Length: 424
Image (cartoon, rainbow, N blue to C red; front, side, top):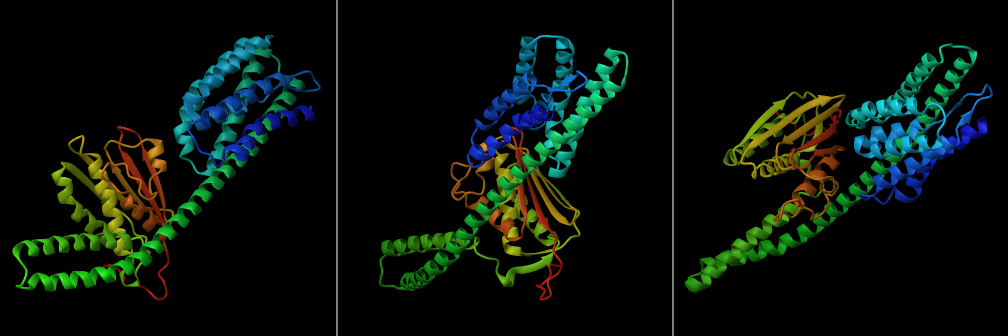
């Protein structure tokens, strides 16, 4: 029995190992299909090599991969497993085909329904709930078996003990491994993104300062030349055009400087109320032009240290993007909610616009990527850079045609000893 149990555990561990070895660093749209295929193969192996107890009962771990795919993948991914499970069970034959079909159907209808709720949970809670659902599933199955058997003798209770402990133990171990893989991927992506932002910040700061000096000198000489009475009107027009272009170049340089490190003169220790109200007032005329209603709520009492200019620009960029996403629908609602949760400042910015696909969300914050035809991507890069500097995290929820929600979580900080000027 113990050897078969280890073999079943290796069957279930197989897809996890394949992901770590081959797919952890290669995200693509076929990954979920490959995982479903490997889970189906695992499920077939578990049915083909069941665990045999000394008293004559047999059971297998087919529902462990079935439940995992149902919780992480929802109905779309678990439906092929359901079909494969029942076709193969019919092929194996023997008693219990009808109960297996009815029970797998019940699991198919109930468990994937919890998928979206399950994914939103924390890692520890996902481990707990996946283990609980596996134990509950096997418990209901055993209760059904006991009712059909009619007598609950010592052999039945031995089967119950072995089946429940095996499912709980295997599901717990597999979920811990899965959550560790997810954590490693997130940490790796966060480190890569932070390094990218640091490179952009350093490059922007050094290049911008070097460019500003010749721009200032050139602009000064052109202004003196423009006041001269020895140039013709046509030449004066050329000078004015040159000054306009220099001003535009100055603005571009200023935009790049926004990626540099926070300036000490702009640092404050506050709950962001002043910045939130200021940016809301700034964006209201733009929202009115595009028939967008702004719903603003503020209920935060936690403070943190930040560069007020960068935070203001960060919020304005997000507000502006949300309003522009609703232009095609001729209006909508921009919901701004700034609250607190477990010593974190939580900023939620939600629009009812066109939304984004998953691949678009995954590319947000990368240099020069934009979902707008005329966009440069620098606005979102600045948003991610600013949030990264205050040790914050950005989560994006969006679907095509259903709007987008940016959820920014910033940890609260104790007031520094050498305190910055606090915003009133």
